[in-house]
Length: 585
Image 1 (cartoon, helix red, strand yellow):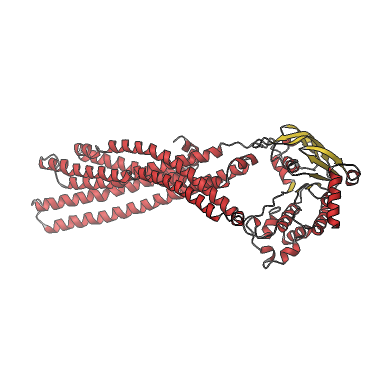
Image 2 (tube, rainbow, N blue to C red):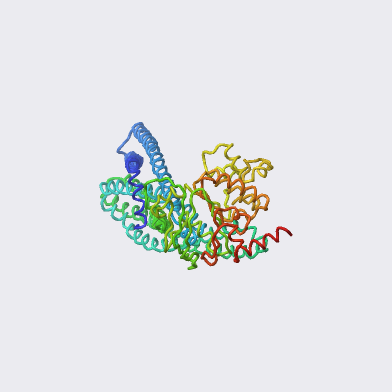
């Protein structure tokens, strides 16, 4: 139960509703006892009539009618309060589920990029969906049935002891055996539940990646192999679920056996006590049989509830693993501040923890507000890393990054990121309308602003050509659009955000040179008072920048304006000559 202690704050949050539910449960169980007593009274009345103690049949009918009326009335009242009890406990559990899912989701939002490199999407989804659902069963049904069972046991056992102490002792004798069996089975269920949840995460991860990469699977004709892998994983999951079910299957037969034993003892021991005169009438035996059967479902739910609790603990343990994760990138400055956009790198070096690849080595440069910096270099030279460091997706190990002459760590993290418009190399679009994808950069943007941003990104004409225009709903990850269209919609999203710093990570690689020229001309107009950094493999994207740096193996090997760099031997001049000849061809 240690892992489930994390949920205590939710119990405190809804404590008054839970207390109300507890009181209603007690009332419901008390009224549930009255029909049993009235049935016992009716049986005793009939016994007296048979024995001649009551000779008038009218009196018998009157007594029976009175008892039947009370039975119906008490049953209806008990049913009404039971309905209220279920409404309170189940509704509270849904509220707690909502709170827990939000807590997990907010934690996912807080965690740094490294966390997502180390954990798969399918596993993340499983913990916030299936694991939280299993925890909800503990927060709702398990708590409700536990309270019901405890209340019923206290009331029923108290009344049974009051009526026939010795018979009660024999009746409840099998219960300690049941408790021991539940304990042993619970341990086994907990272990198997953990394994089942782990396999479910693997299954979710595999299917999510398969569907996301379906175009690759089809292109390489790997459908059959992927299907075989899925079947193998499904069989493994099935076996682990069967292992769990086999253990859970012991519960109910054991309950039935022990309840049946209790009924047998009531009839045998109670019958002897009636014969010996230790119990006044047979109505007590009838009452005890009904009490034992009233306890049948609660006793049966002990096993079910125990199984729920064990599964919830296994799931909450998995949830807690991520909730205890601390983001590597922390907001050290709570005060929101305005960012102007002056950027300076001072001897910055950076090594990726997961691959141990040193991406940058003693990199130094500066770019001021209103200026444009272009970064050119071969694949793996560290170009994208510079942009990620400016957005504090990672923190540098050595050196310093300064924004407006302040260490980037001393700035409010959210102020920094809100002042940045970032277009990644791999454009990501949501499964939503094109309009809303652009509006993601500014949720309050008008339709006119969306259109203007699309025009500046040279994608307006393409969008108008679609049947539903800006209301066209995209497939997953924007699969509906071509690579160039996705890049331009992403650029429109960054433009509409109107940030102080614009970061473009080779986001024009999929467009033709004519469209590239149009976009660049628009960007230079828009970014007159902004800081712009363009990462590219094309000279055409870099030539109009105020400053250009050439990266090679994480180091700056050349730096200067376009005119200066084409006049000296080096990578830039060679690349310029190569691309110029290709253009002429």
